[in-house]
Image 1 (cartoon, rainbow, N blue to C red):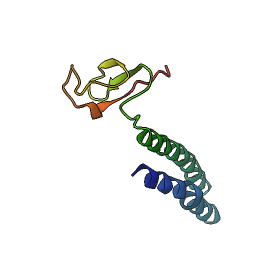
Image 2: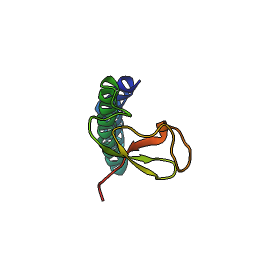
Image 3: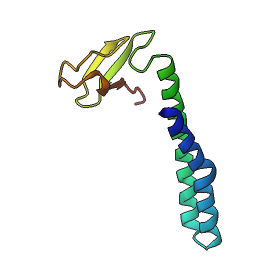
Image 4: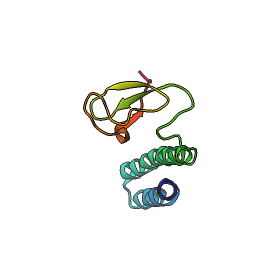
Length: 106
C-alpha cells in the first residue's frame, strides 16, 4: 500500500542513503558519497508522492475530483476534461486506470 511505500522511502532518505554516503566518505569516495546524498533527496520526493496518493485514496479522489480537471491517458495522450476520466480511453481503449491528471508545467 502507499503508506508502506512512503515509510520505505522515508527509511531510504533518513537511514540507508545517509549511511551509505557516510561509509563512502570514510573510504575516500567523495563523489559516491555526494551521489548517495543526492539520491536521498529524490527519495524525499517519492515519499511526498506516496503520501499524496494515500490521501487521494482515503478521500476517494484518485479517479474523481470535486472540480473539472484535465485527465490524460498515459498510453496514447488523449485528454478528457471532467471530474472523472472515462471508463476507457475513446482513442486507444485502455481502461480508466491509464488516466492521470494532466501535467501543466510547461
